[in-house]
Length: 197
Image (cartoon, rainbow, N blue to C red; front, side, top):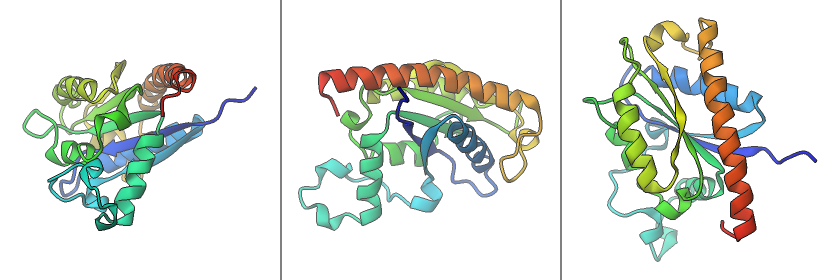
């Protein structure tokens, strides 16, 4: 029996001018789609989440919220897993990323796995943000899988369209996706059995 495709929300962290993250996100989106996933890309530069005052679920009068934000909330709630594509800002989580993710309550993330894809223009591949993301994602309830896909010198790894420039990128993505899939299928089955959303 064929299983339904996994629904993935991918959060892109950077809003910097000339950001490399869009290359990485385009690549990961294609890799996930080729692996039978439905992917929604949340880009804070395009979606323009205001500086958070209240998360979406705080609003009793939901008519004051823009339609795109209500659609985004539904996509997060319906997701089976999350992929976080992030650089590091001051060796930490980019503020646009945490601001965007904080719009949705922890219950929307709970009992779903996440995968971390970090990158940098230098040789460390953004690993310092990955360590902080582990704690952040754990508190949201979407524990990250053990594999971290770190990409050093991302400007050399992908062209502007997200086309990989060496075979290591595809093999690294596949390792992360394999782990994410296992956890996402298991957790979806358990959520369905327990009657959780």
